[in-house]
Length: 458
Image 1: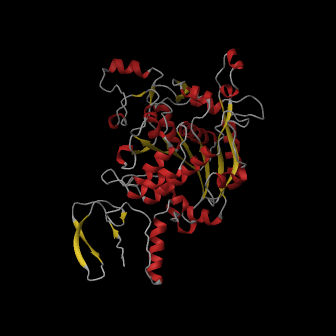
Image 2: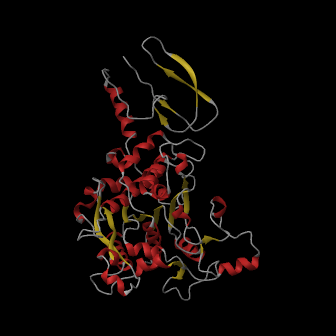
């Protein structure tokens, strides 16, 4: 008969502790080195669900095993009753204190929230029609009423209220008329707005939450917009105070084009118009109760999430707490843009894979605190007169928000990774699930995330 022992490992240390292993004959006590603040099963095997066969257990032991198995489930797949109640601390996890003390080591409740919002982005990918030969190419495959269920997110407690489309502002040459239709697809479904409507989930979260989720680049014109990497002034910013760059807020031209361009018709407004209309309607409906706006996206979607957050906070005078959870996002704007974001109270948590090249483009960072931690090109060591000339160029970007820096190299389950793999959303969710702290080994449970997500385009 086999008996299983479970060890609870306390925070990392070089000291030792003791654990009791029960056998069928007599118990023994031996010292075990403490290596990581996580939960492990038998040390000879990777952590899997606890399996007990041919063993009669009393009710108390069965309840302990059930609790252990529930702890090994992905946060999004746990029954809502088993998820952590955030209660009055919800604002901390939404970044009101810039996630101080929650990132290294990574707080388990924050990990659960990051993964939960990452799944909303995953649903945006799964709902998009990538088939360029299909007549419904670049549209949403599912109706609003069943999108979350059919994309693998049942029982979230959220209800979709608006589909979102982005339109490219690129002027196409005449020869495009003879190209396949997918080449010139100007407007495409890019995400959605969802509102938490379930009373139990609202009670668990401590407030009603509104989610805006954006997918990454998918269409030909979106790729072309990504290449328009020079900075451009935000519209309607005349007369605003200048920032440390000596100019007003500036953002990447292509991202701004996708956010503000439309066809000029009521049937196809700009992404900016759709976001403003829907958020305005929701603020009228729920503005008198505790409310949060969480904008999340991957790659291009992360950039659009940052722009949408900036737009909401500057357009609505009484906007609630706005939080951005971005995965693998490129740079978006200059230092004046970052300063305006911070002044308006927008909270941005950038989840970054240090092996992901997309997070290091476009442009370069000038004498920025992030540059010393990365291998980005920066010019802090150049003479001041050269640096001043560089400041005036449209290529000087700034990192925004707080950063959770991860690395594909830390995972024992990623091998032979390349540029595309490092940027995939499923890789980011895997790394978040496995990260404990900068001084702890990777969590053994994180390997399960890799098999749960289809390969997405960046």
